[in-house]
Length: 291
Length: 183
Image 1 (tube, rainbow over the protein chains, first blue to last red):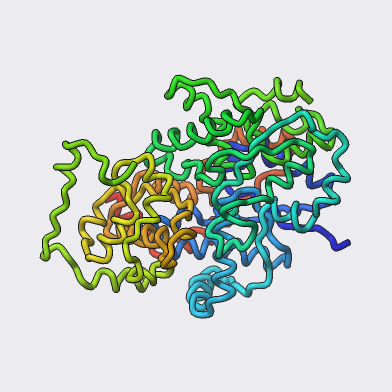
Image 2 (cartoon, helix red, strand yellow; image 1 turned 180 degrees about the vertical axis):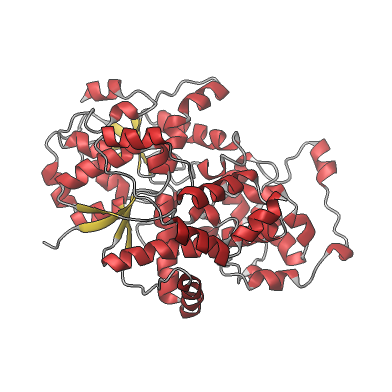
């Protein structure tokens, strides 16, 4: 059994507002024997800077990649946005010699050089491919057979398909399989791969609420008791903003939105407190009572 | 919402008359040199991007197909002064669905980058950039948050190397652009 050890890339959104994801992810990964090494001196992945300066995004991302190369460890992200940028830049710099030369010219200014020796993974890749479903199922002590949930993988762990090269972006199954491993039933619903809309919240605060409302509506329609996410930014859209959505459209959803590691942790027999379920904005206590 | 379903008022105000004097025939070549935007000329206006765009479903003005056509026609000034380009949520559905493999979202990113070079930048990006310069993180993570991490048993948040970050902002020219935008 190879050693499962990764540099954990937290990004900005998780420490800013979504600690419950980090807390639960660390707990379940520890249980699965995955070792996480803290990433000293990392900076923003670069994603938020791409719209204003593509080269800055490239160099911010490349700097993070260089830090990982120095430690000779693969990066594991919890955030879809961080995964998307770090993975894409890593891939482009490995494949495109001209681009690599250009970026390395920038990096000279900070005494770094991209070599292309590591890989970038997202939590769900680590769980599904490296840890494996067998091992996950072995740790499930309390199968959540009474739960019916719906998944939202989020865009950046799937698209662009050509760059991500994992799962089927039109009909993704990884998160569904990971949910099934906990014993919970994962329901299909309309427009599963639709974007949460959060990336434009700061430009137009109303429009993403319409997108999120539609998704919550589709999830409610199939009778899901909870929604499961693997991205802190998507999570904010459905959990933190759910009250706003309810107010704006005069509707009641009250659908708890759990980070996948919270669901898995519950199935492993961990307590809701340990998994920071209390930190969720939409109360999940009724859901916990079902278990 | 289909592009043709508009109220009579918006129809009249939006009717687009394209004048030859507005068209910059070099613009598409300029764009096609930007990484990710190389295939701009391959777009044959099928409209799949707009049909599958989650934002276009809820917004009356954001139409990726139209942005690509305007770029091909060289309507540079209109594009670079148009707030609608900031509505792309970068879900990359258009990129995956385009039958011509045109990197639509990347072209929109190129248009945004050029807008910034011209001295216009939405406030939120100025804030994000200034946060990264100050802390290495795009959001300001308060002392309270850092203390809470400790209480929750999380490891301390690594401090970024601000010297390096500042240097990257300078080398890539964003520091200068930020000054230009602010003045």
